[in-house]
Each structure stands twice: as structure tokens, then as C-alpha cells.
Length: 242
Image 1 (cartoon, rainbow, N blue to C red):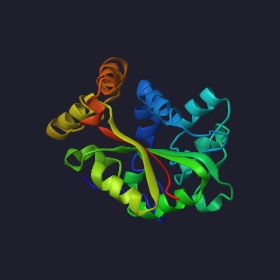
Image 2: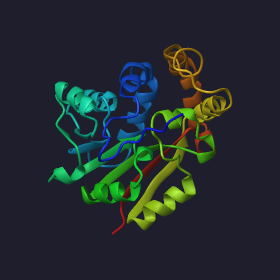
Image 3: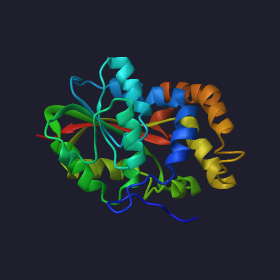
């Protein structure tokens, strides 16, 4: 399968139609849980920035819960249009924004970027002194599947190397753990049996079933401590290391 990466020359998301029409509408519980984790960190939330907002699925949840919209960063022109049509102030780069933020979050985005060090450094610069950066990232490189290829991932993250990377870039780790314990198994099945957006694993029906039924089991497993052993994703909350 051909890899489709986003960069300065190709700003289009690997499969923005699949993201907007299939993934995000099918994973409502999953997305709400991500925002619950993000907004649950100890941080002021007067000014919020989302890096890599996509079609706005998470930004809308934040707006509904806090009654104010986050500022968004997105480079895909078609997704920028969707965000702006939904009333979100949107920029293509953190460098285009003058203000600093209490909370910056990013979900399933950094893995699309070759030089993630550069982006993390830029986001660090946009934090207020006591501001928080929260990242939600795909975990375990050995789980890299054809789905990762399809959407243009450079990598999945290992927890120890991520901790070292963040410390090297001037961050202090406040919290880190895995998330979506059962999703770890689901991703492993995708690695074995493949990814099919028409039928089977990867179809809209399979995503809806996982979100409505199996994700609640996954959340329970996370709550009782499995998220410190494994999970499909890594959740990490950091601040500037003074």
C-alpha cells in the first residue's frame, strides 16, 4: 500500500473523506473519552489550542463542554474549510499565532509528522508558563498496520522513548499512561487479518459496534489499571520544565 504523508508540499490528509465521513461520526464514545481525559488534567482552561483539529470532532466536544471554542491548527485545506464553516478560528501553523495558551492538546496527529521534535518545540513556545500540553498518540510500533500506512503515519510511539523525547525538549512529565486497553487487541487483530473499509475490520459498521459496545469494556479495563500495562494509545500530560 502506498504511503501518503502530509508535509509542506502535500497538506492533504491521507484520507480526509474516510476521516470525516466514517471514522469521526462512528467513534462518538471514543472521542468523548479523549476529551474527558484532556479536560481532566490540572490546568487553567481560559485559552485552549487544538493542534491538528481535523474536521473538528474534538473541537466541537470542547466547545460544548466549556461553552467556548478552542483555537484550531490544521493544514488540510478541505478540513480548514469545515472548521471555519463551523465557526472555529483556524490557523495553518502555531507560528501564525501570537498569543500563548493555558492548554494545548493534540490527538492522533504527531505520528503524521516526520519532524515531530520541531512541532513539539513550537507548541512548547506557545504555552503560558504554567500551561499544559496534552498528547494522545498511537502506541507500540509493533502494532504498525496497513491502517497506519493508509492514513500516513510515520510511526507509533513507545512510552519510554516518548518520555525521553519530551524531557529532551524541555518538558516535565505530569502524567503518562496507556489508553483503550481493548483497542490494543483490536489493533493486533487488524495487523493479523488486515483492514477493510468496505466490510470487516475498518468498515463503518465495525467501528460503530466497537464504539457502542466494546469501548465501554475497554474503558472499564483502563479504570481498573490495565492502562498502565498496555493500550492502543498513549496519553501524556506535560508542562514546561523550568
